[in-house]
Image (cartoon, rainbow, N blue to C red):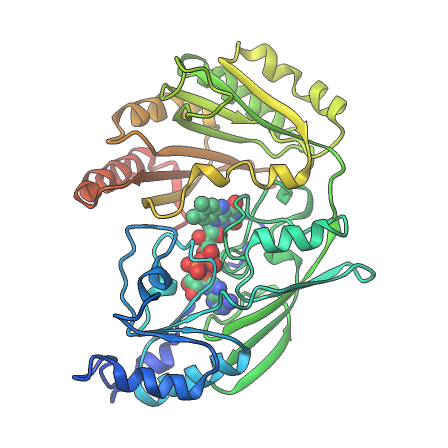
Amino acid sequence: VTGLPETLFRTEFPEIQERPMAMPAVTADGGAELRSALASAVHGAVLTPGDAGYSDARAVHNGAVEHRPAAIVQVASAADARAALALAGERGLRVTVRGGGHGVDGAGMAGDIVLDLRALRGVSVDAQRQTATVRGGATWADLDAATGAHGFVVPGSRVGSVGVVGSTLAGGTGWLTPRYGTTWASVLVVESVSVDGLRTDAATEDEPDGRSVITSLTVTLYPQPAAVLAGRLLYRLADAADVASVVADLVTRRRPEFAPMLRWQPAPAAAYVPGDVVGRPVLAVLPTWTGDAAEGAQFLAPLRRAARALVDATHPTSYTELQQQLDASSPWGRRRAEFAALDARPPAASAALLETALADRPGPHGFVELTPVASSGEWVTRAEAQWTDRADDARHRSWLAALETSLRPSTDTTH
Ligand SMILES: Cc1cc2nc3c(=O)[nH]c(=O)nc-3n(C[C@H](O)[C@H](O)[C@H](O)COP(=O)(O)OP(=O)(O)OC[C@H]3O[C@@H](n4cnc5c(N)ncnc54)[C@H](O)[C@@H]3O)c2cc1C
Protein backbone atom coordinates (compact mmCIF):
# COMPACT_ATOMS: atom_id res chain seq x y z
CA VAL A 1 0.00 0.00 0.00
CA THR A 2 1.60 3.24 -1.13
CA GLY A 3 2.88 5.43 1.67
CA LEU A 4 2.91 2.72 4.33
CA PRO A 5 6.07 1.97 6.25
CA GLU A 6 7.52 -1.13 4.62
CA THR A 7 7.43 -3.20 7.76
CA LEU A 8 4.48 -3.14 10.07
CA PHE A 9 6.00 -3.48 13.49
CA ARG A 10 5.30 -3.77 17.17
CA THR A 11 6.88 -1.70 19.85
CA GLU A 12 8.98 -3.96 21.98
CA PHE A 13 12.45 -3.69 23.39
CA PRO A 14 14.40 -6.69 22.10
CA GLU A 15 17.76 -5.70 23.53
CA ILE A 16 16.19 -5.67 26.98
CA GLN A 17 14.30 -8.93 26.51
CA GLU A 18 17.42 -10.76 25.42
CA ARG A 19 19.30 -10.11 28.67
CA PRO A 20 20.39 -13.49 30.02
CA MET A 21 20.05 -12.54 33.70
CA ALA A 22 16.35 -11.61 33.52
CA MET A 23 14.71 -11.51 36.95
CA PRO A 24 11.16 -12.82 37.23
CA ALA A 25 8.73 -9.88 37.03
CA VAL A 26 6.70 -11.14 39.95
CA THR A 27 8.68 -12.62 42.82
CA ALA A 28 7.44 -14.38 45.97
CA ASP A 29 6.15 -11.06 47.33
CA GLY A 30 3.44 -10.98 44.63
CA GLY A 31 5.08 -8.06 42.83
CA ALA A 32 5.20 -5.68 45.82
CA GLU A 33 8.93 -5.01 45.43
CA LEU A 34 8.62 -4.26 41.69
CA ARG A 35 5.71 -1.98 42.41
CA SER A 36 7.55 -0.03 45.05
CA ALA A 37 10.71 0.25 42.90
CA LEU A 38 8.63 1.61 39.99
CA ALA A 39 6.60 3.90 42.25
CA SER A 40 9.74 5.54 43.56
CA ALA A 41 11.09 5.99 40.01
CA VAL A 42 8.04 7.58 38.32
CA HIS A 43 5.41 10.24 39.05
CA GLY A 44 2.47 8.44 37.40
CA ALA A 45 0.47 5.73 39.19
CA VAL A 46 1.75 2.13 39.19
CA LEU A 47 -0.87 -0.62 39.14
CA THR A 48 -0.15 -4.27 39.90
CA PRO A 49 -2.54 -7.27 39.95
CA GLY A 50 -4.94 -6.91 42.84
CA ASP A 51 -4.91 -3.10 42.84
CA ALA A 52 -8.21 -1.31 42.35
CA GLY A 53 -8.10 -0.09 38.77
CA TYR A 54 -5.73 -2.80 37.50
CA SER A 55 -8.49 -4.74 35.70
CA ASP A 56 -9.77 -1.63 33.96
CA ALA A 57 -6.25 -0.52 33.08
CA ARG A 58 -5.31 -3.83 31.47
CA ALA A 59 -8.53 -4.04 29.40
CA VAL A 60 -8.11 -3.22 25.71
CA HIS A 61 -10.54 -2.90 22.81
CA ASN A 62 -10.35 -6.59 21.93
CA GLY A 63 -12.04 -8.45 24.80
CA ALA A 64 -10.19 -11.66 23.85
CA VAL A 65 -6.84 -10.13 24.91
CA GLU A 66 -6.12 -11.45 28.37
CA HIS A 67 -2.58 -10.30 29.13
CA ARG A 68 -1.81 -9.70 32.80
CA PRO A 69 1.32 -7.53 33.00
CA ALA A 70 3.23 -7.53 36.29
CA ALA A 71 2.90 -3.74 36.40
CA ILE A 72 1.15 -1.01 34.46
CA VAL A 73 2.80 2.39 34.70
CA GLN A 74 0.44 5.26 33.96
CA VAL A 75 3.12 7.39 32.43
CA ALA A 76 2.85 11.09 33.34
CA SER A 77 5.81 12.39 31.32
CA ALA A 78 8.66 11.38 29.03
CA ALA A 79 10.87 11.23 32.15
CA ASP A 80 8.53 8.58 33.62
CA ALA A 81 8.85 6.47 30.49
CA ARG A 82 12.63 6.73 30.56
CA ALA A 83 12.82 5.85 34.27
CA ALA A 84 10.58 2.80 33.80
CA LEU A 85 12.64 1.68 30.78
CA ALA A 86 15.85 2.00 32.80
CA LEU A 87 14.44 -0.04 35.67
CA ALA A 88 13.13 -2.71 33.31
CA GLY A 89 16.55 -2.79 31.61
CA GLU A 90 18.31 -3.43 34.91
CA ARG A 91 16.02 -6.35 35.62
CA GLY A 92 15.77 -7.76 32.11
CA LEU A 93 12.01 -7.24 32.02
CA ARG A 94 10.01 -6.92 28.83
CA VAL A 95 8.36 -3.53 28.22
CA THR A 96 5.50 -2.74 25.85
CA VAL A 97 3.53 0.44 25.19
CA ARG A 98 -0.23 0.88 25.44
CA GLY A 99 -1.54 3.72 23.27
CA GLY A 100 -5.19 3.66 22.22
CA GLY A 101 -5.49 -0.07 23.00
CA HIS A 102 -6.96 -1.05 19.59
CA GLY A 103 -4.23 -3.39 18.36
CA VAL A 104 -6.20 -6.58 17.69
CA ASP A 105 -3.36 -8.79 18.96
CA GLY A 106 -3.02 -6.82 22.22
CA ALA A 107 0.75 -6.46 21.68
CA GLY A 108 0.79 -3.21 23.64
CA MET A 109 -0.37 -5.06 26.77
CA ALA A 110 1.96 -8.06 26.40
CA GLY A 111 4.96 -6.83 28.41
CA ASP A 112 6.04 -7.57 31.99
CA ILE A 113 5.81 -3.81 32.41
CA VAL A 114 3.32 -1.84 30.32
CA LEU A 115 3.79 1.86 29.78
CA ASP A 116 0.24 3.21 29.53
CA LEU A 117 0.36 6.53 27.70
CA ARG A 118 -3.28 7.48 28.09
CA ALA A 119 -2.49 10.46 30.32
CA LEU A 120 -0.38 11.99 27.52
CA ARG A 121 -3.30 13.11 25.37
CA GLY A 122 -2.61 16.74 24.44
CA VAL A 123 -2.68 18.09 20.89
CA SER A 124 -1.32 21.56 20.09
CA VAL A 125 -2.12 23.19 16.78
CA ASP A 126 0.05 25.77 15.04
CA ALA A 127 -2.50 27.17 12.60
CA GLN A 128 0.01 29.50 10.97
CA ARG A 129 2.48 26.76 10.13
CA GLN A 130 -0.32 24.27 9.51
CA THR A 131 1.15 21.67 11.84
CA ALA A 132 -0.01 19.91 14.99
CA THR A 133 1.97 18.18 17.70
CA VAL A 134 0.18 15.14 19.06
CA ARG A 135 1.27 13.51 22.34
CA GLY A 136 1.93 9.78 22.42
CA GLY A 137 -1.36 8.67 24.00
CA ALA A 138 -3.80 10.87 22.02
CA THR A 139 -6.69 9.29 20.14
CA TRP A 140 -8.13 10.28 16.79
CA ALA A 141 -11.10 11.88 18.59
CA ASP A 142 -8.58 14.12 20.43
CA LEU A 143 -6.74 15.00 17.22
CA ASP A 144 -9.88 15.59 15.13
CA ALA A 145 -11.39 17.87 17.81
CA ALA A 146 -8.22 19.96 18.15
CA THR A 147 -7.50 20.35 14.43
CA GLY A 148 -11.19 20.70 13.47
CA ALA A 149 -11.47 23.77 15.74
CA HIS A 150 -9.03 25.49 13.34
CA GLY A 151 -10.59 24.11 10.14
CA PHE A 152 -7.84 21.53 9.58
CA VAL A 153 -7.54 17.75 9.36
CA VAL A 154 -4.98 14.96 9.36
CA PRO A 155 -5.83 11.91 7.21
CA GLY A 156 -6.32 8.89 9.46
CA SER A 157 -8.42 6.43 11.40
CA ARG A 158 -12.15 6.27 10.78
CA VAL A 159 -12.81 5.34 14.43
CA GLY A 160 -12.23 8.00 17.10
CA SER A 161 -10.98 5.83 19.97
CA VAL A 162 -8.03 4.44 17.94
CA GLY A 163 -4.62 5.72 19.11
CA VAL A 164 -2.92 8.19 16.77
CA VAL A 165 0.62 6.85 17.23
CA GLY A 166 -0.38 3.16 17.14
CA SER A 167 -2.31 3.62 13.90
CA THR A 168 0.41 5.79 12.36
CA LEU A 169 3.03 3.12 13.03
CA ALA A 170 0.88 0.79 10.94
CA GLY A 171 0.57 3.40 8.16
CA GLY A 172 -2.79 4.93 9.04
CA THR A 173 -5.53 5.24 6.46
CA GLY A 174 -8.88 7.02 6.46
CA TRP A 175 -11.53 8.76 4.40
CA LEU A 176 -9.04 11.39 3.27
CA THR A 177 -6.28 8.99 2.21
CA PRO A 178 -7.17 9.20 -1.51
CA ARG A 179 -6.73 12.95 -1.21
CA TYR A 180 -3.93 13.46 1.34
CA GLY A 181 -2.24 10.05 1.69
CA THR A 182 -1.58 7.99 4.81
CA THR A 183 -1.05 9.40 8.29
CA TRP A 184 2.57 8.27 8.17
CA ALA A 185 3.06 10.42 5.05
CA SER A 186 1.91 13.47 7.11
CA VAL A 187 4.48 12.98 9.88
CA LEU A 188 7.20 15.64 10.01
CA VAL A 189 8.88 15.00 13.36
CA VAL A 190 9.03 12.04 15.74
CA GLU A 191 9.90 12.66 19.38
CA SER A 192 10.79 9.53 21.30
CA VAL A 193 12.31 8.40 24.54
CA SER A 194 14.55 5.42 25.22
CA VAL A 195 16.87 4.49 28.08
CA ASP A 196 19.36 6.88 26.48
CA GLY A 197 17.01 9.86 26.78
CA LEU A 198 14.72 11.98 24.66
CA ARG A 199 15.40 12.49 20.97
CA THR A 200 13.76 14.38 18.15
CA ASP A 201 14.06 13.09 14.60
CA ALA A 202 12.80 14.35 11.28
CA ALA A 203 10.49 11.73 9.80
CA THR A 204 12.08 9.84 6.94
CA GLU A 205 10.83 7.37 4.39
CA ASP A 206 11.68 4.63 6.90
CA GLU A 207 9.54 3.78 9.84
CA PRO A 208 10.80 4.45 13.39
CA ASP A 209 12.94 1.63 14.77
CA GLY A 210 10.26 0.36 17.13
CA ARG A 211 12.58 0.37 20.13
CA SER A 212 11.45 3.58 21.74
CA VAL A 213 8.39 5.12 23.22
CA ILE A 214 7.02 7.80 20.91
CA THR A 215 6.12 10.74 23.10
CA SER A 216 4.87 12.97 20.29
CA LEU A 217 4.45 13.28 16.53
CA THR A 218 4.39 16.56 14.67
CA VAL A 219 2.19 16.31 11.60
CA THR A 220 1.19 18.43 8.60
CA LEU A 221 -2.37 19.77 8.59
CA TYR A 222 -4.62 19.93 5.56
CA PRO A 223 -7.79 21.96 4.98
CA GLN A 224 -10.91 20.28 6.33
CA PRO A 225 -13.38 19.44 3.54
CA ALA A 226 -16.21 21.97 3.61
CA ALA A 227 -18.79 19.47 2.37
CA VAL A 228 -19.16 15.73 2.87
CA LEU A 229 -21.61 13.11 1.64
CA ALA A 230 -21.68 10.27 4.18
CA GLY A 231 -23.91 7.42 5.31
CA ARG A 232 -24.61 4.17 3.52
CA LEU A 233 -26.76 2.29 1.04
CA LEU A 234 -27.81 -1.27 1.87
CA TYR A 235 -28.30 -3.73 -1.01
CA ARG A 236 -29.58 -7.28 -1.30
CA LEU A 237 -26.74 -9.76 -1.74
CA ALA A 238 -28.33 -10.80 -5.05
CA ASP A 239 -27.34 -7.34 -6.34
CA ALA A 240 -23.91 -7.27 -4.67
CA ALA A 241 -21.80 -8.22 -7.71
CA ASP A 242 -23.46 -5.58 -9.95
CA VAL A 243 -23.22 -2.87 -7.31
CA ALA A 244 -19.60 -3.73 -6.42
CA SER A 245 -18.64 -3.62 -10.06
CA VAL A 246 -20.11 -0.11 -10.47
CA VAL A 247 -18.22 1.08 -7.38
CA ALA A 248 -14.98 -0.43 -8.74
CA ASP A 249 -15.61 1.35 -12.03
CA LEU A 250 -16.07 4.68 -10.23
CA VAL A 251 -12.79 4.09 -8.35
CA THR A 252 -10.92 3.87 -11.66
CA ARG A 253 -11.86 7.52 -12.28
CA ARG A 254 -9.39 8.37 -9.47
CA ARG A 255 -11.34 11.24 -7.95
CA PRO A 256 -9.59 12.13 -4.65
CA GLU A 257 -12.94 13.06 -3.07
CA PHE A 258 -14.24 9.51 -3.53
CA ALA A 259 -13.36 7.15 -0.65
CA PRO A 260 -15.80 4.24 -0.82
CA MET A 261 -16.04 1.21 1.44
CA LEU A 262 -17.95 -2.01 0.76
CA ARG A 263 -19.07 -4.15 3.68
CA TRP A 264 -20.63 -7.59 3.48
CA GLN A 265 -22.41 -7.56 6.83
CA PRO A 266 -25.66 -8.22 8.68
CA ALA A 267 -27.88 -5.09 8.48
CA PRO A 268 -27.37 -3.25 11.77
CA ALA A 269 -30.11 -2.56 14.31
CA ALA A 270 -29.95 1.18 13.64
CA ALA A 271 -32.66 3.84 13.45
CA TYR A 272 -32.28 4.06 9.65
CA VAL A 273 -32.87 0.32 9.06
CA PRO A 274 -36.49 -0.97 8.89
CA GLY A 275 -37.23 -3.77 11.38
CA ASP A 276 -37.69 -6.42 8.66
CA VAL A 277 -34.22 -5.68 7.24
CA VAL A 278 -32.30 -5.71 10.57
CA GLY A 279 -29.99 -8.75 10.77
CA ARG A 280 -30.35 -9.65 7.06
CA PRO A 281 -27.03 -10.18 5.28
CA VAL A 282 -26.52 -7.20 2.97
CA LEU A 283 -23.90 -5.34 1.01
CA ALA A 284 -23.44 -1.95 2.67
CA VAL A 285 -21.90 0.65 0.38
CA LEU A 286 -20.41 3.70 2.09
CA PRO A 287 -20.05 5.95 -0.97
CA THR A 288 -18.10 8.57 0.97
CA TRP A 289 -17.53 11.79 -0.97
CA THR A 290 -15.51 14.57 0.65
CA GLY A 291 -16.39 17.39 -1.72
CA ASP A 292 -19.23 19.41 -3.20
CA ALA A 293 -22.55 17.62 -2.54
CA ALA A 294 -24.15 18.28 -5.96
CA GLU A 295 -21.02 17.11 -7.76
CA GLY A 296 -20.92 14.05 -5.51
CA ALA A 297 -24.54 13.20 -6.30
CA GLN A 298 -23.80 13.43 -10.01
CA PHE A 299 -20.65 11.33 -9.69
CA LEU A 300 -22.57 8.66 -7.78
CA ALA A 301 -25.51 8.51 -10.23
CA PRO A 302 -24.31 5.22 -11.82
CA LEU A 303 -24.43 3.59 -8.38
CA ARG A 304 -28.06 4.56 -7.93
CA ARG A 305 -28.85 3.09 -11.36
CA ALA A 306 -27.06 -0.21 -10.62
CA ALA A 307 -29.77 -1.66 -8.38
CA ARG A 308 -32.54 -0.55 -6.06
CA ALA A 309 -31.19 -0.12 -2.53
CA LEU A 310 -33.08 -1.68 0.39
CA VAL A 311 -32.10 1.36 2.44
CA ASP A 312 -30.66 4.70 1.37
CA ALA A 313 -29.21 6.44 4.40
CA THR A 314 -26.76 8.77 2.65
CA HIS A 315 -26.82 12.43 3.58
CA PRO A 316 -24.78 15.61 3.34
CA THR A 317 -22.96 16.17 6.62
CA SER A 318 -19.79 17.50 8.24
CA TYR A 319 -16.33 15.93 8.33
CA THR A 320 -16.69 15.66 12.13
CA GLU A 321 -19.79 13.51 11.78
CA LEU A 322 -18.17 11.41 9.04
CA GLN A 323 -15.32 10.62 11.42
CA GLN A 324 -17.81 9.28 13.97
CA GLN A 325 -20.06 7.20 11.73
CA LEU A 326 -18.27 3.88 12.31
CA ASP A 327 -17.66 4.31 16.05
CA ALA A 328 -20.59 2.02 16.95
CA SER A 329 -19.72 -0.82 14.57
CA SER A 330 -16.84 -2.26 16.60
CA PRO A 331 -17.82 -1.78 20.23
CA TRP A 332 -15.28 -1.83 23.04
CA GLY A 333 -14.76 -5.14 24.83
CA ARG A 334 -16.19 -7.62 22.29
CA ARG A 335 -13.93 -10.56 21.51
CA ARG A 336 -12.37 -10.02 18.09
CA ALA A 337 -10.15 -11.59 15.48
CA GLU A 338 -9.36 -10.28 12.03
CA PHE A 339 -7.21 -10.60 8.97
CA ALA A 340 -6.43 -8.13 6.23
CA ALA A 341 -5.18 -8.94 2.75
CA LEU A 342 -4.47 -7.18 -0.51
CA ASP A 343 -6.52 -8.51 -3.41
CA ALA A 344 -5.76 -7.80 -7.05
CA ARG A 345 -9.20 -8.99 -8.18
CA PRO A 346 -12.13 -6.59 -8.42
CA PRO A 347 -14.65 -6.93 -5.55
CA ALA A 348 -17.38 -8.32 -7.81
CA ALA A 349 -15.20 -11.42 -8.31
CA SER A 350 -15.39 -12.19 -4.57
CA ALA A 351 -19.12 -11.45 -4.17
CA ALA A 352 -20.33 -15.08 -4.29
CA LEU A 353 -17.61 -16.25 -1.92
CA LEU A 354 -18.33 -13.45 0.54
CA GLU A 355 -22.06 -14.19 0.43
CA THR A 356 -21.32 -17.78 1.46
CA ALA A 357 -18.89 -16.61 4.15
CA LEU A 358 -21.51 -14.31 5.60
CA ALA A 359 -24.07 -17.10 5.66
CA ASP A 360 -21.57 -19.40 7.42
CA ARG A 361 -20.52 -17.00 10.16
CA PRO A 362 -21.03 -18.57 13.55
CA GLY A 363 -22.66 -15.59 15.32
CA PRO A 364 -24.75 -12.49 14.68
CA HIS A 365 -21.79 -10.12 14.16
CA GLY A 366 -18.79 -10.16 11.87
CA PHE A 367 -18.24 -8.58 8.48
CA VAL A 368 -15.93 -8.40 5.50
CA GLU A 369 -14.87 -4.96 4.36
CA LEU A 370 -13.27 -3.95 1.06
CA THR A 371 -11.53 -0.62 0.49
CA PRO A 372 -9.71 0.40 -2.69
CA VAL A 373 -6.07 1.36 -2.96
CA ALA A 374 -6.58 3.80 -5.80
CA SER A 375 -2.89 4.10 -6.63
CA SER A 376 -2.40 0.38 -7.30
CA GLY A 377 -5.89 -0.72 -8.37
CA GLU A 378 -5.88 -3.32 -5.59
CA TRP A 379 -8.41 -3.73 -2.81
CA VAL A 380 -7.78 -4.28 0.89
CA THR A 381 -10.01 -7.06 2.18
CA ARG A 382 -10.42 -6.96 5.96
CA ALA A 383 -12.53 -9.60 7.68
CA GLU A 384 -13.50 -9.25 11.28
CA ALA A 385 -15.09 -11.78 13.63
CA GLN A 386 -16.78 -10.39 16.73
CA TRP A 387 -18.31 -12.41 19.55
CA THR A 388 -18.86 -12.20 23.29
CA ASP A 389 -18.43 -15.65 24.83
CA ARG A 390 -15.00 -17.23 25.39
CA ALA A 391 -16.52 -20.67 24.70
CA ASP A 392 -17.05 -19.52 21.08
CA ASP A 393 -13.39 -18.53 20.46
CA ALA A 394 -12.50 -21.58 18.37
CA ARG A 395 -15.62 -21.43 16.18
CA HIS A 396 -15.09 -17.78 15.24
CA ARG A 397 -11.36 -18.17 14.68
CA SER A 398 -11.85 -21.15 12.40
CA TRP A 399 -14.51 -19.28 10.43
CA LEU A 400 -11.99 -16.50 9.84
CA ALA A 401 -9.18 -18.95 8.96
CA ALA A 402 -11.43 -20.75 6.45
CA LEU A 403 -12.36 -17.43 4.84
CA GLU A 404 -8.72 -16.41 4.62
CA THR A 405 -7.87 -19.71 2.92
CA SER A 406 -10.75 -19.45 0.50
CA LEU A 407 -9.65 -15.97 -0.61
CA ARG A 408 -6.20 -17.29 -1.53
CA PRO A 409 -4.33 -17.48 -3.86
CA SER A 410 -5.45 -14.09 -5.15
CA THR A 411 -4.72 -12.32 -1.88
CA ASP A 412 -1.54 -11.30 -0.12
CA THR A 413 -2.12 -11.22 3.63
CA THR A 414 -0.75 -8.03 5.16
CA HIS A 415 -1.27 -8.87 8.85
C1 LIG B 1 -12.38 -0.49 15.63
C2 LIG B 1 -11.09 -0.26 14.89
C3 LIG B 1 -11.06 0.62 13.82
C4 LIG B 1 -9.89 0.86 13.13
N1 LIG B 1 -9.90 1.73 12.09
C5 LIG B 1 -8.75 2.03 11.46
C6 LIG B 1 -8.72 2.97 10.38
O1 LIG B 1 -9.74 3.51 9.96
N2 LIG B 1 -7.53 3.26 9.81
C7 LIG B 1 -6.37 2.67 10.25
O2 LIG B 1 -5.32 2.97 9.70
N3 LIG B 1 -6.36 1.75 11.24
C8 LIG B 1 -7.52 1.42 11.85
N4 LIG B 1 -7.52 0.48 12.85
C9 LIG B 1 -6.29 -0.27 13.16
C10 LIG B 1 -5.42 0.50 14.14
O3 LIG B 1 -4.75 1.53 13.45
C11 LIG B 1 -4.36 -0.44 14.76
O4 LIG B 1 -5.01 -1.46 15.46
C12 LIG B 1 -3.40 0.32 15.68
O5 LIG B 1 -2.32 -0.55 15.99
C13 LIG B 1 -4.08 0.75 16.96
O6 LIG B 1 -3.27 1.62 17.68
P1 LIG B 1 -3.63 1.91 19.23
O7 LIG B 1 -2.65 2.88 19.76
O8 LIG B 1 -5.07 2.22 19.38
O9 LIG B 1 -3.43 0.46 19.89
P2 LIG B 1 -2.37 -0.16 20.90
O10 LIG B 1 -2.78 -1.59 20.99
O11 LIG B 1 -2.29 0.62 22.14
O12 LIG B 1 -1.02 -0.02 20.11
C14 LIG B 1 -0.77 -0.72 18.91
C15 LIG B 1 0.75 -0.90 18.73
O13 LIG B 1 1.35 0.40 18.63
C16 LIG B 1 2.29 0.58 19.69
N5 LIG B 1 2.18 1.97 20.21
C17 LIG B 1 1.04 2.65 20.46
N6 LIG B 1 1.35 3.89 20.90
C18 LIG B 1 2.71 3.97 20.93
C19 LIG B 1 3.63 5.00 21.30
N7 LIG B 1 3.22 6.20 21.72
N8 LIG B 1 4.97 4.73 21.22
C20 LIG B 1 5.40 3.52 20.77
N9 LIG B 1 4.58 2.52 20.41
C21 LIG B 1 3.25 2.74 20.48
C22 LIG B 1 1.88 -0.44 20.75
O14 LIG B 1 2.96 -0.82 21.57
C23 LIG B 1 1.36 -1.60 19.93
O15 LIG B 1 2.42 -2.41 19.51
C24 LIG B 1 -8.69 0.20 13.53
C25 LIG B 1 -8.71 -0.70 14.60
C26 LIG B 1 -9.89 -0.93 15.28
C27 LIG B 1 -9.90 -1.89 16.43
